[in-house]
Amino acid sequence: MVAMVLAATLALSLYLPLMSGQLSLATPGFYAIGGYVAAILSTKVIHVTGPYPIPLILGEMILAGAGCGVLAVLIGVPALRLRGVYLALATIAFVEIVRVLSLTVEFTGGAIGIFNIPQPFVTANGIEYLLIALPMLICAALFVYRLERIGVGRALVAIREDELAADAVGINPTRYKVLSFAMGAMLAGAVGALSAHFLNTWNARQGTFDASIAVLAFVLIGGSRSFVGPIVGAMVLTALPEGLRAVAGIGELPVWLATLLRDGRVIIYGLLIVICTLNFPQGLIAPRQPVRKAVKSS
Image 1: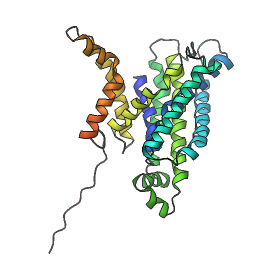
Image 2 (image 1 turned 90 degrees about the vertical axis):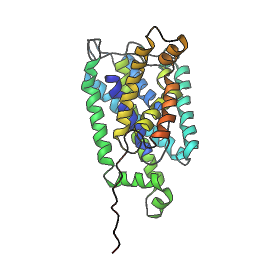
Image 3 (image 1 turned 180 degrees about the vertical axis):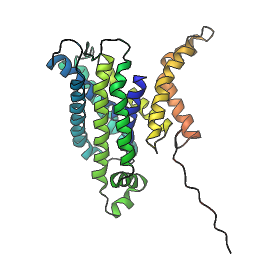
Image 4 (image 1 turned 30 degrees about the vertical axis):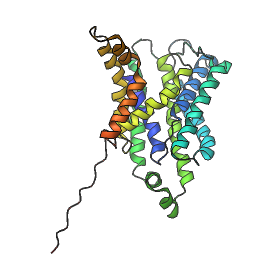
């Protein structure tokens, strides 16, 4: 359940730049950076005996989010001049740079990563993390809900629908694109900081190209035109691997099929993206189209 909530919040961080029409796959990179911020602070800077205080975790989430926001602005100003697939490639390159650096820099633990990240609860089931993760998801959802209904959100949607027309009426596309990119990065960094404590370990596998595809699948399958879509898509697809493992445990299945169901999550995500794109172009949760009444001619 906690993993589903964290995935839903991470999906919202990708939805924010999509509001302005940006196909950014940089979310796992900021997610990984946020996790490293929390892991390094809690293991190498702050030393606490006993359960790790929740206020310290919240402080790490704020710090990670702020740091990722600043980094997003520095990256976004030159990168967001690109569009479409070129922007996607640039953000994938950013994710790979973060992964390679985390493998080579000493204070990130290299390929081994950082272990024994302190946790605020003594029980092992981790369900208590809902006390932090669920309010974060609710706050993020309410923020996006409100954002869509104020001038900033309308400007982002206008840029997504027609950037030239938005520019012609006085909307600065670059400023709003960087703003949405930074907001998504801040949310991803905060989720990463909390996830590091939840997982108790953090390494370079947390921010990879596979993770980019997974988060993109959350949004595209759930729906990219409403903030509810990424939440639903993330929760369904996060629960899906557990269901596939249960099916793979059936003894009558062929070995190759059981292996695909158990380990081929990215392949299955790719197939689901293709199927949903063909059958549900706007995702499972699509906004209602206004009903237009026919005008009777007199």
